[in-house]
Length: 252
Image 1 (tube, one colour):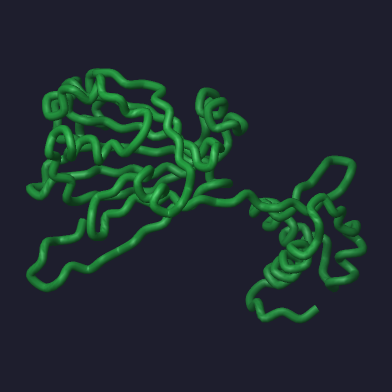
Image 2 (image 1 turned 60 degrees about the horizontal axis):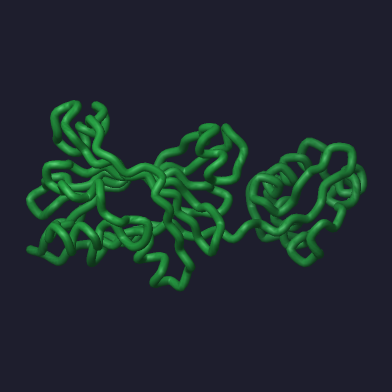
C-alpha cells in the first residue's frame, strides 16, 4: 500500500480504505479484520482506528454479528447566512443555490425574555420578545430547528405574521424597514432533546451543531437573536469573510 498521507499509520490506512470503499457498491461487506490487518501490515488497534473514522464520516457501517459494510455518506448541505455584502437569511441563500427549502412554524408567540435572550437583545429580563421556532428542511428532509427572538416593542406584528415560508430578514425589511447591518455568529455543539430528535428524525442525544447569530443595525442595536440546531450528518457550516475597504464601514 502506498499513500501520500503523512502522520500516524492509521491515517494512511483510513485514506486508502476511503478511496477503496468509494469504488464499491453500497452494502458491500468488507473483508474480516485479520484479512485487512495482514493486507495493510498493521495491528488490529491501528485498523480499528482507521475504520472508526470512516464509520464516523458515514462511509462505513458496523452491524453486530454481521460485519462492516459500505455506506454512502448523506449529502451535506451548507448552512449559510450571508453577511459579506448583505444580511441574507438561510432560506434566501439556500434557495439561490438551487435547493428546495421548506419551513414549518412550530412556535410563534410573545413571551417574557429569558435572561440569556435579554442579554443578547440588550433588553430587561422578562421584557416581551417574539419567539419564533421553525423546522427547516432541505429537499424534503429535516435539516435544523431554528429559534429566533425579536423585541416585541420593535416588531409588534411579528407574532401574527405568516412566516411559514420565506425569509424572516426579508419580512423585517419589508414590514418595518429594519436596518440589518451587522451580525455576530458563534458555532457550538449540543445534543438533541427527545423533542428535537422526533422533529429531525434522529436518536435522542445525537450530536447537533448549534449556530448562534445576533443581527444588529448600523448603530449597533441588536434586532434579532437566533440559534439554529442542525443535524451534522446532513449539514455543514460555511463562512464568508470580507475585509472592509479603508475608511469603509466595519465588518462584524
